[in-house]
Image 1: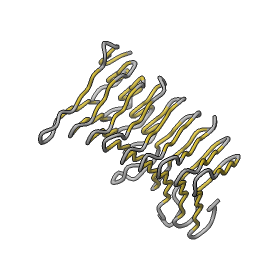
Image 2: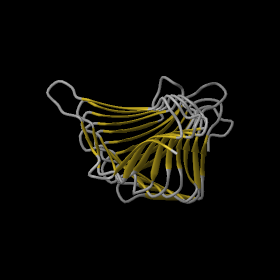
Image 3: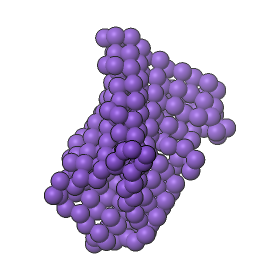
Image 4: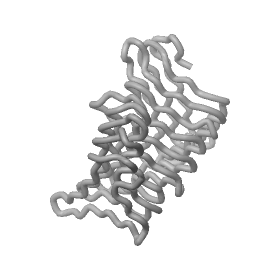
Amino acid sequence: YGYGSRVVHLLVDGADGMLRVEGLWSLGTNASDVIVSNGTLFITNTTAYVFAGTNGGMRMGLVTGGGAWWTNGVGGLTIGSNAQVMVTATGKLAYAGTLMVSSVTASAYGLVVTNGGQVLGAASAYVGYGISHNAALVTGPGSAWNGGGQSLYIGSGLATNNVLRIENGGMVTNAALVIGNSVNATGNRLIVTNGGVLAGNTSVTLGNSSAGNSVLVVGGAGVTSLWNNAGNALTMGGT
């Protein structure tokens, strides 16, 4: 899908609709989109890739509207260079294999969860694995990333300067968070701001054998940002 192409669009839409494919490759020379909307179930059984092309065309995966689901199988989902997946308007994205937010341009968020969107994990997730300057955003009331009790890494391997930002009522929960996962993973940040919530996570590790990583929790005008570790482990500079 979209390989070597110019502008390609895949729209999966409508109440009670369903499309099941073995895998998905969204890449090429220019822009292409995958849109799952309005009560439709889209299932990728193996691996899904959303990558940019040689001409820098934006790759967009959009899950939007009540009842819209994009479910990824054991092969997981990779969001690559100059690409973005947005989960919005109570749409849901689920992954049973590894989720990779990788090689995104420094000025954009590779994964955006907004306006009540939900991301549901059943495997490890990485915001930056071996590649730097990747970012994910969870924003707006009802928007949530539930890690399913699995590991969520912000910067792993040689990845530096990666960011997970939680704001405006967005929530990240039920994950084993690691900010900076190796000696070379430095400058990675977790930001909770303007009413964002980080709560109910199984553990938080700030710097697994690495230095220069940070967590910032800051309020906003008339709102309180929250980091509630619920009595679970907080490790700083773990080995």
